[in-house]
Image (cartoon, rainbow over all chains, first blue to last red; front, side, top):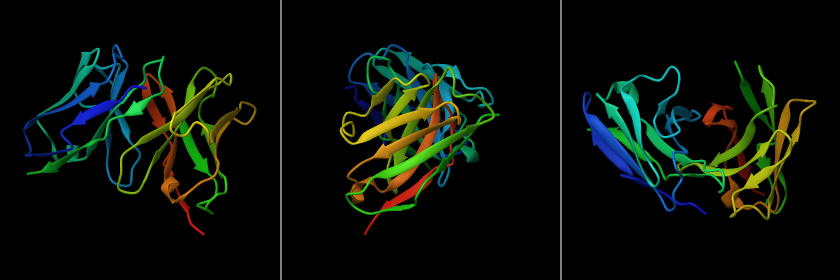
Amino acid sequence: DIQMTQSPSTLSASVGDRVTITCRASQTIRAWLAWYQQKPGQAPKLLIYKASNLESGVPSRFSGSGSGTEFTLTISGLQPDDFATYYCQQYESYSPSTFGQGTKVEIK
Amino acid sequence: QVQLQESGPGLVKPSETLSLTCTVSGGSISGYYWSWIRQPPGKGLEWIGYIYYIGNTKYNPSLQSRVTISVDMSKNQFSLKLTSVTAADTAVYYCARQASGIDYWGHGTLVAVSS
């Protein structure tokens, strides 16, 4: 099974900062990776699919990159609404899907 | 606009079976994978499994012996059964549509396992 290692687990940042979150897969997942944002009491929201594709309606300050085993989510110019927990998910067809452990983005 | 709604008991006794149903509205079940995901209080997301609309399933290996996901296309619903539950199965359970990424989620329903 494919394990996803997400880092850091917590990140303290200020409004306007550029923030990067990393996910590493234990085996290649090609580009079958998604990123989600979750706020307390809410279901997760899809931000990025297939590693680098921005979901409709998601602000362009969010971007994703990577392929194979190493992926990043970047928020360019952190906004107050972006303080939340972020998860990666691999959905490679040959394996059960798995989520990363999550990264909580906190106000510095 | 596709909407998903979980329904089922909010309290299940230890060793019994947790049963949830997800009703899909605003779109058809055909052509997609339909997933269950759970989140224990204060913890991260755990993928439980999915079913393709024609009935193919894939499950989390750690839960596979206890999980069954089924689909009822006539009702535009899919369901989750988790047997022999313990307190560790207490979580918010989400149903969701897996396209490229999970693009639609239910609001989630809290299921507590307690006697």
